[in-house]
Length: 471
Image (tube, rainbow, N blue to C red; front, side, top):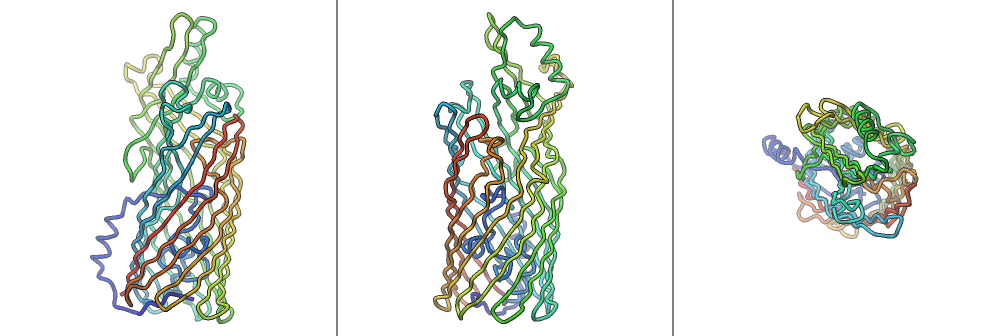
């Protein structure tokens, strides 16, 4: 079943290019299937994120590009805006709550596809996903020292697809994706957590000449000297790019097969990305010691931060789309996301500058890794659509993907815990050429207590609105 759209003339290339450039720095999204979105495009997301074997518009470029060959028009332009509303609370082991102040993220997207005979091709810009939150400096996450805690990880893609209709039964496709990553991090660690990185290594490991110098300074201090905190700080106020940035490429292949009328099968493979290190020059880390008889002594080091080996995982997905009766569509997709191969640890390096203010730490380095050990994730997606009139189609769906983050290693700055979603939406044909599509997703609250006794509760309400025009 498809929303009826007539065949029109091609869009003017300059107009498409201008719109593309206007969205070229579109931010990515805070996601809920791990760091993936539960669905891409409102047609898909309204049906639980299913998309493998039916026409879901130009969002096919980030879902299964072979479904582009199912589009009924020769040229289509889609412009979308999404709003993502996470609700995240971190509760300390003593029961004190800190609510994330990051409660709304806005995400534009764009897709244009043209069909020429059996060939469909075009371009699209989509947010792949991400995660993040922000805790006030006066909350318990500030450790009593007024330290703001903030993360934002965003991944976007500029996608060039090509789909070929081999026969009435089979279509195949591939894409080349240009991928960009932005990351902000303001992370306060207690003295005990930082000591664990240096010695016991339960939650990660730190090394480098900065630690050697730090240890020497500590050894010269009076008995009873302790570490109050360590603070990693690279963040900006830009809504479109993170302070640390990296760039790279990925690819996809896909196919759609129709064994009989009213039944289609879809399959796709998304490659692991190849992204450069995320670089954040001109930032800082800080330490504070509590020295008996002297009080707090703080050292802030200026320098360059680099996040290493951050990649987006490979994924394989397949699905079925069935039209049991005129005006009805039922879809089922299964996805396997290979988080384990890319989320073993969070690896960060710092190089102190030679500035005099860095004192004995000038020119020295620190390497820190936080253990992640994410698991591979299976996502089940189910959706139903019903065309009520020629102009109106309604949709609903369900989405479930087990939390890939081991409870023990969950960090309240990286709350990728939502598992279960219900979805709904509709499409309305405003004219023969134009239609509006809307989706709403609710991610049910999930609470997890980590190895440090911190409980993170995360729920989410998302919506997408898309305007589609055929030519």
